[in-house]
Image 1: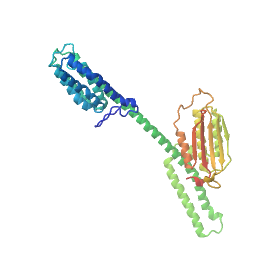
Image 2: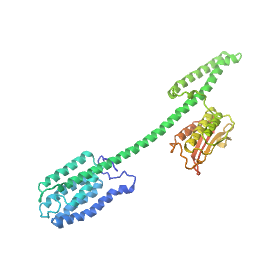
Image 3: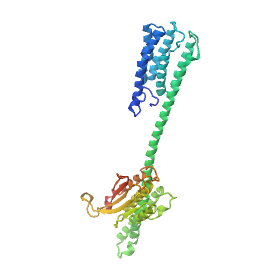
Image 4: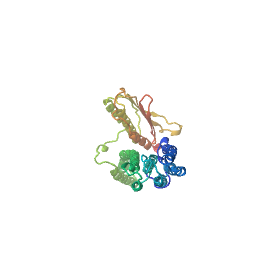
Length: 416
């Protein structure tokens, strides 16, 4: 449905994603015109007794603008409403049977109800209130001149028109609420994904601090102790080592101050040494104790600390997903080193391949710990792989399992 228009032509239901819904107002308007135009003309001339020219002219003025109501319902009302009132006044000039409705015949009421539905779907509440008050005022005023006496049935024009306005407003506002809910859900999902990405980056920054801080501490100690370990150093060399030590200490201080913004003071396990390839077997053992059979193929290779940490976190997230989404599934964790290809540099340019493959849950009716995935774990994996300049492939398998494959460069010069 459309929201309240701000001016200018705006076709009813133009914002709908379904084509048949967009076409519905035009089809309804055409059907009403085809049915009501001859019916109104015949009723006014044959049964009420108006002359043919007057009856046909009034019928056209009362029905044809319904086609305009699809795009400009208020402008259509400016034509139809005066035509309906003029028709009621014209009927006072003829002698028609008492059993016929006055001031508005049944076919006129049907057309006006359709017009009110179009108005309710597109106009503001203030405009709709003024339309209904004008309708009620005209109806009540005409009843004063009723040729056969007035009764409650003569107010059906006002009552049905008001009911049509209320129904249309209720439908429009319900559709608007649903649209806003969908929009809010979309925004919330995007914010959730963004927050997950930022949290993962903050965690990576904390972990990288521990890795870099270790190297900086080694540099500081070596620079400070150089004059004691090395004999007969020239004064300028001693001064250079002192400057190196001072710069390293200042850098460590700056890192700690920046990390204070990221580190959660309530989390104490962040102070522990960061894990690497050597700790992956502990993850495998812990997962096996959760009744998930895991086959682990280790790789005895020396890797940069950042690569080892990234590999550990990737395996940790992948195994956690197996426990959550495929309990009991047979899983393989394989670490291997591939030689560099022509485009990956020379010696030392190999890559560590981290492969985690799980099959479907052995029990088809087993209920996963989480019925649906958010993909936030994959966000963290991709961020870690991007950090070290690697590649990641993750996706479902034809048999219902899942595969995660990460390739991480072993040459620190490739971390760009």
